[in-house]
Length: 196
Image 1 (cartoon, rainbow, N blue to C red):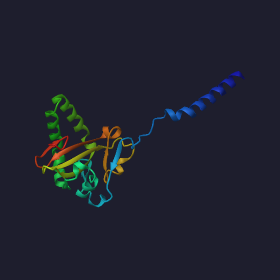
Image 2: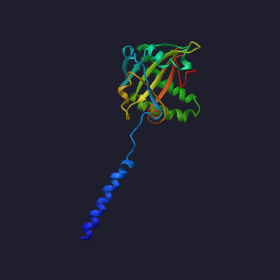
Image 3: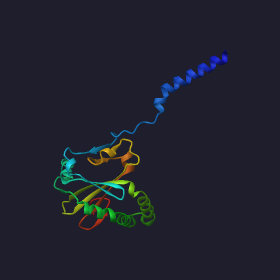
Image 4: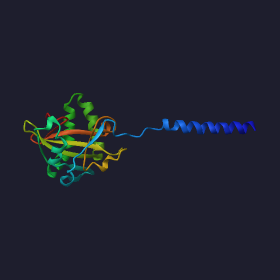
């Protein structure tokens, strides 16, 4: 009888502890509100072009999207926006790997870092869907901002919004799965900022 009472007592303790502590020990869900945002405009839908290139979805946003998205940003107040054409996007996509590897090998850290980064990019390039936005800087340089997004791990199902919203944020999922490069149309060159 003592064994039965002991076993029953242990079972009750386990259920009681699990009921109160399991919710504390469970992995917290991914919360997009922690320093992440989705920039969007209301009228972007009709002008968006979506093309496929080597398995990746490429979303090209119209000039109106850029104007609305950056209407309150002081750095973009005087800039003009344009919609890159799909021929130029295809050209950029074809040349991207070699130009990016060249950029990495010429940067600080040199060849070892560059070779590793190029290898990783070549291995995963098809997994990066892309967003494109064109603008003209104050110096008259035509820039295409290319945003690469890896949706293989997408806890908030952001892929549903990818064709209509510019995915934007810092830290967490964004830091690991989204990166930007800038393509100078005039120089046919890429850089990691728009001061090419």
